[in-house]
Length: 244
Length: 197
Length: 85
Image 1 (cartoon, rainbow over the protein chains, first blue to last red):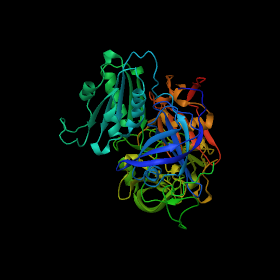
Image 2 (image 1 turned 135 degrees about the horizontal axis):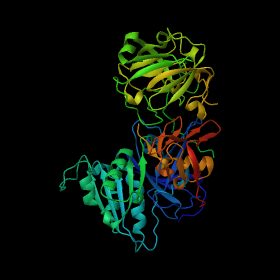
Image 3 (image 1 turned 30 degrees about the horizontal axis):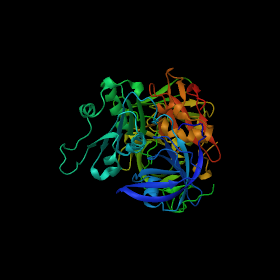
């Protein structure tokens, strides 16, 4: 999929919007000039207020492939400048300017032959680009073994709950940190190094690892992975910040 | 492209004659940092004014308090378009700190823990225009807002009010500090919208 | 305020310089370490973005979006190596 397409600004139109959780919206945009994107890529959305003031923010894509329809999930940050508008006001049929596809480091591309397994580790809204990778894997008949470890506050905060449950080529494990599902076997609690070790491919299998989420989550997990013997060059990270 | 998102208004705000051009009145206090928050304990903190004779005037935390802390109520204006009106601060007037300082230089490089710098004419720091501030909104200044002490120069854009201030160095010319080297105006007067070069 | 990483500057560098920062390697002038700039520590503020070396915290670069131009300061990097894609 990687081509030498030059990154540029495109015009997108909101085809659909639906609440993913109480504070996050799943947006589907039609972007006629979109060249397609790899799994894990992101785009920048730029908003222009009637007076000319502009602000832009980056959002990971949940979709990948050649389609000119792109899907993203935006988490509302209280007091944020852009996310509250996208989550609460951006309407179906409305146009937005988007720049992309962006990012060639934090991407997964199906390749033959796949030897080493792929471990995805998501913290909160960091699940978006990792879901994109798992979805891309789902479209391949053969390929690497995939696991996704998804740390999230509660079932109410989960993104892609239905889709994750239906994945057949990625083993998904969800860790609830504040509140579990009713009848769950394990009490809620923050991810620990031991739990991480128990739920991920061991270092002996030399997995390629993608970690995405808030900076503090990514730094803690990356540190543990190295302590557990994983090769740092096999770990790719993407840190999300609060400025959304 | 001429896409306008009609419901989008940045952080919103109303028009007010006390607001300089291009500013919006906000009620929260956004945090902006160019690097990790320095962790400076009051026991290790000091503030030093250095002149061209290499004379260093230095205060530790208790010495700073002894100079005399006063109450200030002022408006602050960030170049990123937000302003807070009638904000309460407490701090030591820079005038008091310069009382015994002898210098023929007219400009100051302000230096902070963590490496941040900003430049100012000395005359913008004197005559009741600036303080080393230790409290904001009724409580000790928090690290993310520049605590334990920051410079407060409210008549200029707020990037001049250097967080985690550690000292001032007299200089003969108005050499640019961090943001001033990277596209921002050398002086930064909000009433003349002096934002960029 | 915490940092993010170079991935967050992909759009800014693509617009200003037409390069893909997430596969660009740079060498820190402060400590000499070379790394993919996707891994740089990035502090995004409304005033501008500051890129710092993950090893020594030295400032690698600054991006400021002004009224009609974008300032790109990469003086904290000895060089950048941009793959021809």
